[in-house]
Amino acid sequence: MKKVGKIRADELVVKLGLCESRTQAQASILAGQVRMGTEKIDKASRMLSQESLLTIKRPPPYVGRGGLKMESFFKQFPLSVQGLDILDLGASTGGFSDFLLQQGAQSATCVDVGHGQLHYKLRTNPKVTNLEKTNLRHLTPEKLPLSPFPLVVMDLSFISLSKVLVRAWSFLSTGGSMIALVKPQFECTKMEADRGRGIIRDQSIQQRVLKEISEFANDYLTDSELYAQTESSPKGTDGNLEYFLAWKKSE
Image (cartoon, rainbow, N blue to C red; front, side, top):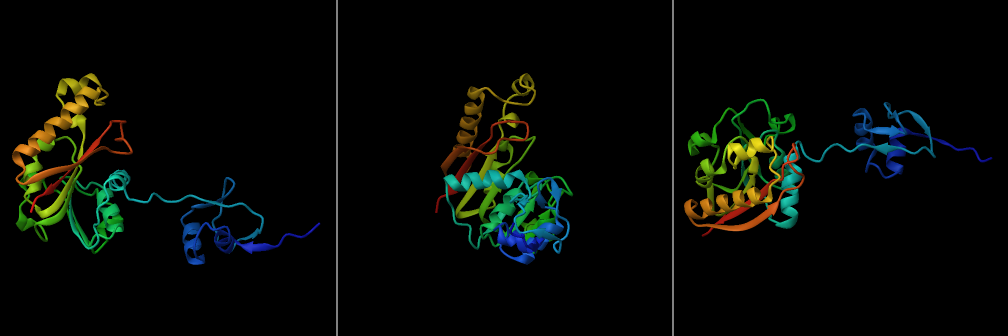
């Protein structure tokens, strides 16, 4: 019987094509992401059979589910953000900003009424300005590192977009785009929300909400042109179907 040789765990990870370099493999092992069956490999120097089958648990690509949602929008409506300064309203953990920075955005200004929510990865990123405890309805250009922005993105909860769209639009530069996540559970009546315990399954309500927001934007957002309307994926945390609406500011 042919004797099977031994190999370092980090070298085997690279050999199996799970990582591009030993440095990357070592980082993955230290992070507890490499396993042999159900056993966690905790040392890069551990000697393993060359026939060992390893798996690696990839970390989420973005700091929040919002990144996946924005990614799904960009797959349908490609937009180059290379070198752009973006304004992220309702940033929360920063999923939208993380995705856009990975796509080449130059900077991200993250605004949220809460505090302590922005992920450490973004809080320590020199390209990110964190404006927490900041209510969009009271936001002024003087509080921002720059204004206007060529791209504004929004993901707000517990408030109707009709109360903040005009203010958000004022921070968008001519020729720029504003992308807003619409959450029907915060746009419908209290009775409608209570009926579904916060989950809106009725398609007629969902479509009415989109129509109302679109009509509001058409009436109150100067020089706006709606260019995108699509379902967001994945769904909201409670299973709510959400939508993206996007406008361009005409030159």
